[in-house]
Length: 155
Image (cartoon, rainbow, N blue to C red; front, top):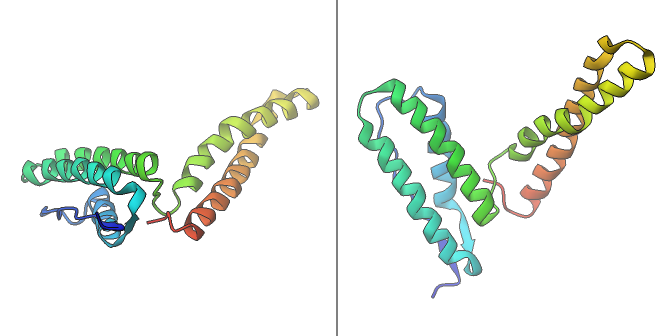
């Protein structure tokens, strides 16, 4: 068995090159085909490759239904990035920043807003916590993205 593995993902064949998620999927495929997977994850990578190829074959088989291609491309992109993160630990650029921005709002922003509102006696100030939560989330997520890049886990 080889000590490293390079994925071989099929190519997208769509006439709609202006669809955002098709462009993202195409970039993701190119990155994955260049990525070298270490030996301890070869079997997992082969299983992931089969899943990704089947999702791409579904998109390729749709034909000229632009609305359906948009929907399925978006769903496929989301599911593929989730599988890559879960199974191989690979993430796309700004994955953690986008994830932690929403987590920052929920875990830091809302509670801080409630604290400000209650301490000032004006619940209209609850909105002050939201930008603080976004800032904290972006800071944490950017740090995790930088760490993933240094570890070679970012596509």
